Image (cartoon, rainbow, N blue to C red; front, side, top):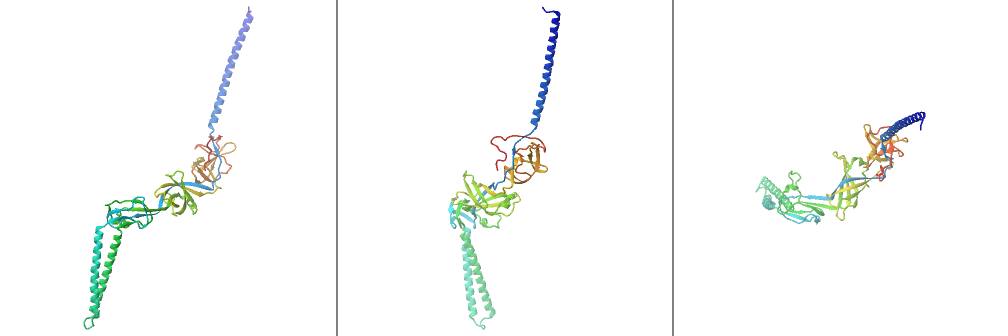
Length: 394
């Protein structure tokens, strides 16, 4: 049985143990809270540091590729208009028909022209008869003596004969003109090639104004014929490439209806001027088409192989920042701090861009800078996701 002294001592020990537990719990809580605050501060600080991928300037290519749309045209193409008015009696060549120069494409019935031609021949016959009698009369007067007829009468008869001769020449010219027009009743091909269009049917009226460049109401061509043994490819090249468009430049033609097929074309000429509306240079390439399987009017991709300066560095276009002062690149130093560097840009190569000044081959460039990145800001370098390397495409 415990004594009062022992009971009192036990009570004090119990109270002391409780106090120790309470103080320990409070201290642990304070320590845990402090640790949590420090952890949150660390997490917040880490989260405030931007994560960036790095890349380095790359050596330029010795040859660069530029792909532009192109239009295919025949080596020679003729739009054949009607030269006489009348009605189509027959047509002989349809779309896609191969023709030689001089082949008959169609015929035109011209009743009015035929009548005018016959009338011109009749007028020629009248003029010839008048000249014959005037020439005979002048000959007879010239044979008479001065006592029988005056010199004035002789001169009058000679002048009349000369005038009638001029009338014959004029009538002959009129006949020749109508005869030439009669020849246009036959519509013929002016070149060897294929018929790329037939715009007439039997019975259609043909207006002679179609062949008169001075007539504002000129009609549409009856036929179109194209020589496609060679083809012209027209490309609008940006003016920035004008100084390297020289003989020897090659182009690869990619045809849409033949995937994987490419045809090599040679530079033929350039316009020698820049179009104001597009700031481009019309450039003409030529290619052989012996199988005649590439047709005029087709749309193709033209891949130009252009010389480039390998000493000019290139960087990913996504690494550029455009601020009020111009183009900049975010460089990262050895302490992972950002330095915004002004750069001078060259040609845009698509995914990459030429850097003419402002960077060195050993510089570390932020490949994906945000618009809010600041000079002197600390960043955290991370490895790019597998399957992607900033700037790996030229």
